[in-house]
Image 1 (cartoon, rainbow, N blue to C red):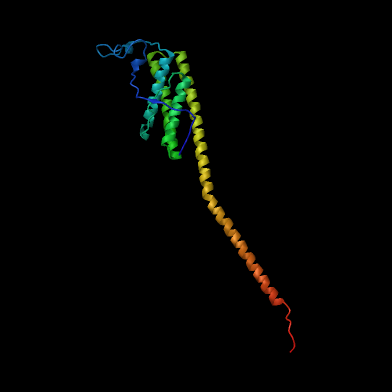
Image 2: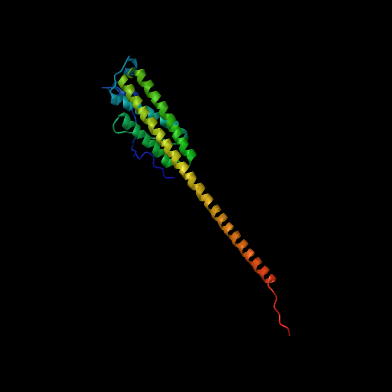
Length: 223
């Protein structure tokens, strides 16, 4: 079934290899790990992240949770690169990928609903994971929390739109199938009714003709 949801294009890059440390400012992964293997940020009481770094972390947490939720279906969003890490761009790209998965892999309403439900479940868990992770770093300030909230609102609005679109598509499809299935029966019923009415009319006409002949006066000649 061809399904277009949201009208957004998707872009998939290679798998993400970012570790938790990569979101911290000013250091590489190797620089953040000491000789004893202990992460430098683990001992920190708080960390300051830019909005972009926090949004990038949130995106990876959400996508990771979606992929984990989808694992039972054998599907994956892959790595989602929104280009710029704003709440709008992140939400739009994730929703576009969810729509693509449904369009490419759902052959029935139940399959479409399963993918949608798994993706929705992953999104909610990913948002929780992002907040928990940032709070653990001491980086969940008012601005970053506001960005996550905006991303959450945009994602939830988009999910409602996708669900509504799926309902419209499958209800329309079911109505068309029902109409197609009913049309031959209706045609047959109409045809049968017409045949019956014609036969009844012919029989009545024949009977009337026979009665008229029977009741007609007899004329004879005297020989």
